[in-house]
Amino acid sequence: MPDQSQTPPPTTPQVPPPEPEPAKKSVAELVFDVSEGTSSLIREEFELAKAEITEKVGKILRGSAVGVAAGAFAFLALILIMEGVAWLLNEEVFAGKTWPGFFIEAAVFLLIAAGAGYFAFRSVQAGAPPLPEQAIEEAKLTKAMLEKEEAK
Image 1: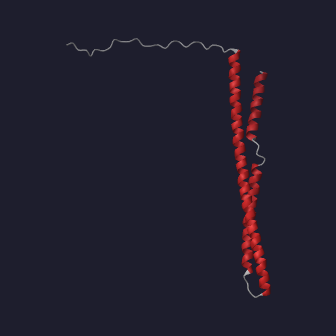
Image 2 (image 1 turned 135 degrees about the vertical axis):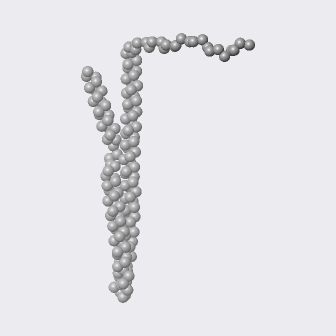
Image 3 (image 1 turned 90 degrees about the horizontal axis):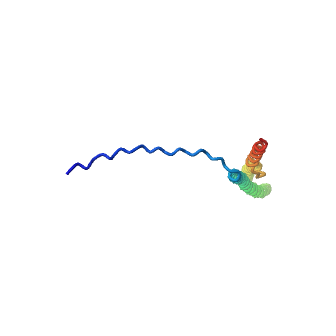
C-alpha cells in the first residue's frame, strides 16, 4: 500500500481584496450622524447633572442629620442645666455640694452641640444650592464650541 501521508498541494496565498475608497456621505447621513452625536452629548450632560445634584443633596442630608444631633445635644444640655438649677436650689436650702457636676456635664454637652452645629452649618452651606454647576459649565463650553464650528 502506498504511503498516504503526502503533503497537501501548495496553496496560493490569499490576498485580501483592496479596500474600497471611502465614499462621501450624503447630507442625510451627515445630519443623522450629527443628531446622533448631539443626543449622545445631551445624555452625558444629563448624567453629569444628575451626579452633581446627587452629591450635593447627600451633603445637605448629612449636614441636616448632624444638625438634628446638635439639637438633641442642646436639648440634653438644657435638661442638665434645669437639673443643676434644681440641685443649686437644693444646695442653697441644704448643705450638700452635688450641683457643680451637673453644670460641668451641661457645659460638655453644649460644647458638643456647638461643634456639631458648626459642622452642620458648613455641610449645608457647602451643598446649597444644589445646582449642577459642572454640567452647566460643560454645556456652555459645548455650545460655544458648536457655535464656533457653525461660524466656519
